[in-house]
Length: 371
Figure: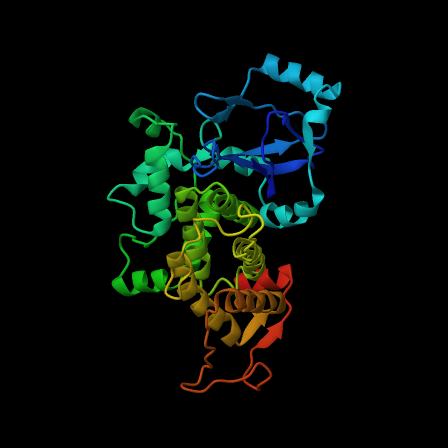
């Protein structure tokens, strides 16, 4: 079992975790064979831990999964916990990983979890086999498809169709609108600023934090819960934001600074390699095809980095974090991002006279630019 980046090997005496910091956490687990060589598909769920609250789940040996208990039973266990009857069986929460978890989840709130999580709260690829229709394509999908075939926990077609999937915001890949000329549609698809503004208004009530919260929710469910559906949503949101060419400099400079910080922390964690603890860092989901130089992320980042670094006026924090993200990908993956100037065929150093003008923007300035 892993609780917000902390792994607990469950033995006969293990009864749970104590001293959990208040706030949102993600619990995910997988059962193994007796020899420890085979594992079931990961199942995860978000919890909102309140001060002195007891969150109770019971292990179902037949289905090999954690299940909720009745309110009466939960209160009975909670009272026993308060009386310290289980104290010697509870492992302490290690605060050393808490700062990293907060960097990955600081925009995830209880409202976001309740809005997106599936019926019952369980996030697992077991409910996502329909995504693999037509056959798995990447090594990631092939590995998960094999796990589904050998899993003891079988899902019926009725269960697949009755809402055991997350309620992610719909992000159209291509914009199509009646009455618009081909040139206008091409322009809108090249710069997704209008689409971003429309989605922020209609789906998030204008809240940038809700969008960033869903981005973090999908990343956690993807990287830790090994959810294909979550990966697809994370990819859609990243593609939407990295596909904007006007918003980062005019209407949404602060959003893009926060966005780049978010994916910087996500990729910094996701690209870690820890041989002593294989559960920390990139799991099977981060396969070679996802990290290759012709992946969607490399292509989008290359254009976005050039856009920011070549801008005549750019917010200083946005430029700083964009360069940090670029450096992370260069050092971790060996990706190359050639920096072009506005003049054909000429390249300049950062301190050259053609380097962008850095301007610190405040909220009022952004509003005036948007008006």
